[in-house]
Length: 89
Image (cartoon, rainbow, N blue to C red; front, top):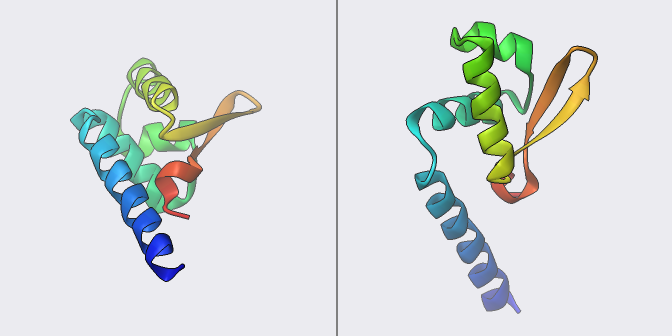
């Protein structure tokens, strides 16, 4: 049972590392900022990373399409969280 658990954990970590390698440098920058914060508001993240609204929006949509993050509407902005597959939990 322990061996199965360790194999599944190794496989999921390897899958996450391979998926992270497919991210562009800008996507990785946004993803790592969200990962550090746990969750981030898109408007605050834009100011923190000093990106235009359109560029950050495109990057967030790409990350959401790749299932790296989840996006939840919050008034006029979005709450961004790392998806369960990428959080390592």
